[in-house]
Image (cartoon, rainbow, N blue to C red; front, top):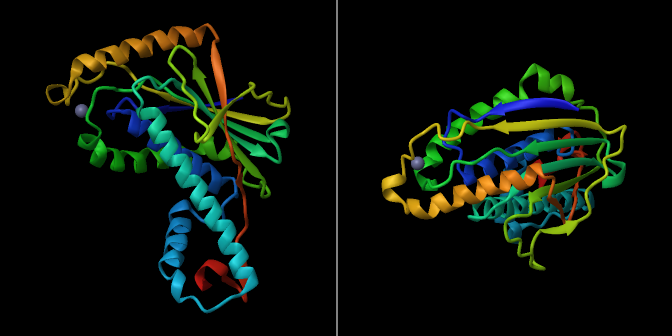
Length: 268
Ligand SMILES: [Zn+2]
């Protein structure tokens, strides 16, 4: 197991910031591990461009259409995951402790597993007051992760297209109301094969580093309760009482498709 530290103590690490960082790491891993052939932003632009002109399309090339469907599905699935992670972290009783990104044909024959370990969050802030700061910060922190020599050395980029499964570990002191429309479902702990390569990305945060800049603007007494719940949760976690949740779908890796040396997404 390789450990990689990501210290977020120099930013107000709100629940939204945490969800955003995790989502960026997931997308970065997909690209770095060759499961999507272009960075996510490009993938998104390409799909959105096509959707805008959906009605005016006359060209019907089978290879292009198949490629579009594959890319489109990955895009939709990632957006769903994004919305769900944001929603889950933003719950006052959110108890997500780890997010696992599992590469392999099935989870049980995983080839590589990245575990993102979540730190204590800075709660009680008003999210919109920190969005601008977060945007800048994310770019910096992602560069620090994905361009770091340690990371690049540990992440072998020569993986063929496979499936990517997402898991979450939650401590069970909070109320976990699961609904059938939830993206994640309760599951047994994942047994990671001994030969799978593993990396742990530890997000660390010094608590109480800032006086709460949004304090006068928010209802702090409620947040106090949240912080206490969080501490309680930590204790439970140490006791090993965790519950596992699995994303109901896998992201299917795909390669670019070229028609006469031009990427299909330039042609749709
Ligand atoms: Zn604040």
